[in-house]
Amino acid sequence: MGLFGKKEACPVCGKEVKGLFLTKIGDKKTLCKDCSKRISMNKELIKTATPELIQEHLAYRKKNAEKYAALRWDIRYTDIPYLKFGVDPGAGFFYLESDDLHDEDNPVVFSFNQLTGYELYRSSQKLDDSDTPGETFLESTLSVVSGLADLVKNEEDTKYEVFKLKLTTTDPYWPKLEIKITFSDERLYGWNGCTAFDWQLKGMCQLFKNIIRKEPITIV
Image (cartoon, rainbow, N blue to C red):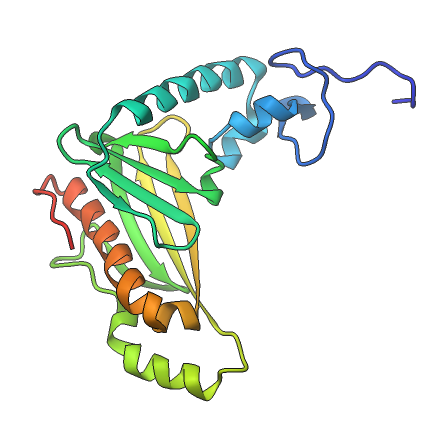
């Protein structure tokens, strides 16, 4: 396209397409900045999405925002880096807010009935899933003392622990979710880790297990 050529129009709303980090959908069409920032769906769906699908999705996202505002979030976990999680046990809904979901200002809301699978990994090792009996087990909680010792010993080096949360749902736009949770050793084993990470991540995962098994919600 020449410097003074016709500007590209958004295939969804018709606005001029300009700016960086915009979303491309099927047939290499580019969405405008406003439409791009309102989308929250699986990357594989975006690659083949038609303008009509995006329009349906944006209407769905508007209803999602109304639902999020109307529900009562009695349980919230907000100290896990780059991830926020809340539950309305009475109505049977939960929300997730994460950079991986591209849901800024409009957290994705799921009903309990939509959640069909849950897995938690530390690096490549599976720590827990919806089929594992008993309470959610976090390997890191057993190594706080050694972790603190390593932290003091290697205070000049920054080390990280990487966890991966995988969920499957019947939601049309997020049938599979994969959320990476990265902690520095200082955050994982330091004071904040002992008081926040330990119970918040464990509590969130235990809730997922309870939801899938149709068990009473327990707060860890």
